[in-house]
Image 1 (tube, rainbow, N blue to C red):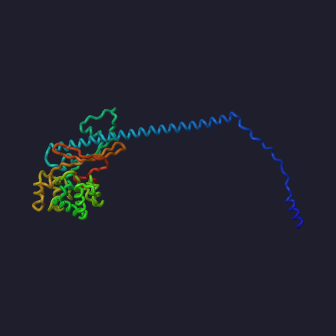
Image 2: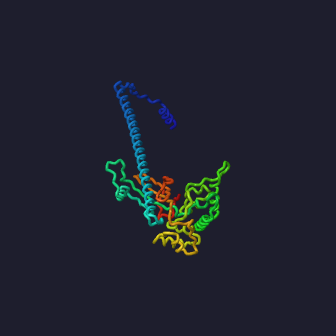
Length: 356
């Protein structure tokens, strides 16, 4: 057995005969014409890629220029329309002054303009429609707006006059803070800050600047919660002003009139809804002797108004508000700013989310 295994092992180790390999063929170089066709194809592909890139770049630049021009044109159109809306608001207030009498929520200026197509609104007013070939397309322009009586709120300017705290105005704000559940310490902080804003300027003084609006009362150290709670009921005007009892909400009426409680304020609101107050004596008759109605602190007319407008032109929405000051029949614009300013729900003296 071992002999057989050794013989089989020797057979397996024996070299196998080499089979003849086919001769290797040498690669022939491509003919010159084929090489030229490949180079031409590659050059054509590079040329097409370059032309496509340049065309796409030129198309993008043209599209960008058109978009920029369209946006700029829409912005200019919106600015002119908002300017016209502001002039229209001033005209309404001027006509109201010509009519005379008290300012109340039943007058035309107090009626908000709900969003309406501008072309339909102009046609409804009897104005001539723009020609069909006009460059300004107002088919997608929608306008809304409102005039708000700012003297339906307590004026922060009344607190300090000539560097001195005014006691009557201070008591009004004390009642407002108490009714809103705000800490009295923040009212003291507010009064002290207002005193510092009227202090004589000096090189070493670190007095705060007077904020331009109620929304910036945080400059004077008030907490955001207090600013948000005060915003619907206070205003910051350039002059001292009385409270218009025809437009003030119940919260302001209760704080502005000494001796009036919440029920008295609600009765005044209900009474003026049926017939506005023509003079302060009518208010005194409603409240009786327990409430103190002062000619210096209260009125039935107003001089400061806010005009709000919003224009929706296609996908562009532009909002604007302006402070209007009326002296007799003259109505001046003191300042204007752009932003998102929603219309006030309810009356012109109702609570608001953003106040000047």
